[in-house]
Image 1: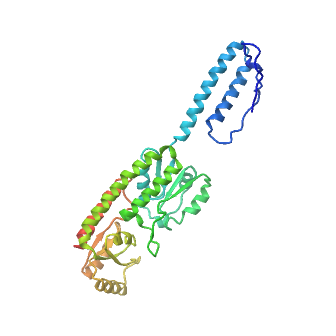
Image 2: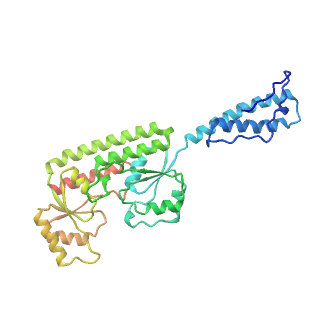
Image 3: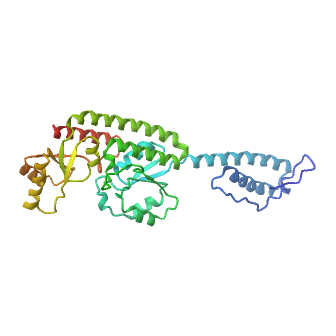
Length: 340
């Protein structure tokens, strides 16, 4: 503890205070008290060396005290309330993170909508984005296999990660497309809420309120799916992208097979196997994703006597968090029409 000799007169001599070259090491970065003391000591050093009367030095010291107190408090407030920089790996995680963060975090997307997550190649700008981020939001479940190397290259030791799928029970094959189930999407939003709140406690109440509002929308969406698809339970389809098993399971639909289209034309054997599956399970339609090879699919559908329907896996689209509901309601209409 620092101690100073008591002055013998009312005319306090600031210049006699033993503060020259004295500084306290702050054990906690951003400590308001510690930084305020150092500010005062620096001010006293300057005032003590000024060639002015002691009474005036005393007045300046009092002024310095209040200035340092204000600056220390303001600096601590600014640091604690700084909006964190959040990087979301791809569109669904971005939509949920942006909905929860609102204006109280800067949310950016790593993989541009429409780019294939499985084919992602990191760019120098991506490494820099991770290096300067506070928080990384990810779907996980093996989808973003590139992340470990990317994070290592970025060298950001302070980066906090939010696993949006934490606590979600996956299917046996570990399929990562959990966001297409409105019920599991609620869990992802809750995980993002908890992660943001832990990393930025100053805005925790805002994150909680935003998440609650978004989850209510997801609950309403689930009720829409349930009420409109319940009469159509058991509807079977063949998919050309293994993105829909959680959605199908939730609402009693059956994804009976996943067919990978070859890069060239399908062989007679390929077509024969698909036809056999379609007949055995009484398949109602073929399900493709937007941008699929519609000409080959349509030819296959014609051979099978089935229709081709397009379902949005939400890997491309608008960056507005409300886009999730727009796309999913369109998916609901598609399923409803295909299963009738």
